[in-house]
Picture 1 (cartoon, helix red, strand yellow):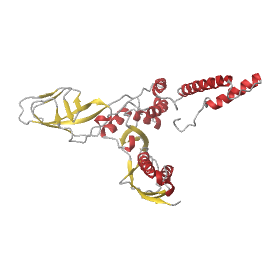
Picture 2: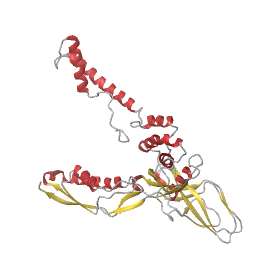
Picture 3: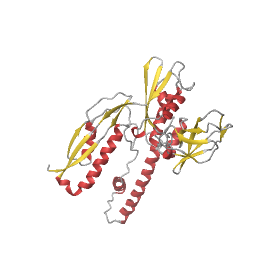
Picture 4: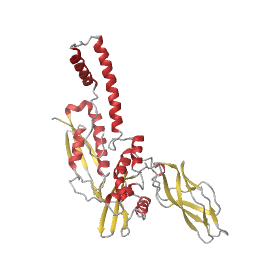
Length: 371
């Protein structure tokens, strides 16, 4: 499918039956002969038509891969190279680990690079050697997951307490920030959006698109960014992560670090960044199925509840997306719900720095009714 809301493009007619019809028409026009369905010559043309359909599909796909709205995988990487915008690679989760040290230790403590901490079979390690002087009894180091991807994300403060590589005078260790920042290699959708914004980065005059481009390079987790100017000379960046998740401190600091670089930020701009303002709603949905669908009721119930959960994620996956109960109702009807009642979900216009977040959502199947 085409990206960015652009219309679909069809370069070639690819339906085998239409190709066959065209070929038979031209053969008849050139020879004056019509071939019946059992005619061996028609069978040869049918075989050629099938081959032409395959080749047209290949050609259509190849041509679409030259367009940013369709390009995928390696073809999209080539489009990115044209704009000096490489795909973001996989990254590892990070956290801060606090050491609690023996107050009576007689000498400085060296924490070597590569010192490991674990939770289950997930390991984090320091990247730099640190020396803790005598008299310092608590010390904080940065630690990085030894595996890239999302596997290291989401461990809350205090969950990582196992020091794998023993050190003298260490009483306890624990993470004091939630582990975050791990991401898989950037997906095609996010990458294509960054390539589309790439021309904006060439300006340092403070355009919205330039800040948005650079903010999106901070992490594959960042799915949406809004740029506002609350007062002259001040620029605020609102950040949203995938599936409506809020950015961590590490995400916010990374965005500010990237966008504050001298070659990206106008001299007079003062930058701040934050998570979006949350507008809560509590949808209570009840639905009935038509009695005519009684034999497939179980499968419809699964599809309807899946559509409900998908709507909740969709609603909070973009900044400024208005709360619109009509969208939910349409999605549920599309999956087979016959009668639907919705409470706690009123049409609400959101500012572009706000997101709608569901609280205690419920959906209940009420039974079968006659049409």
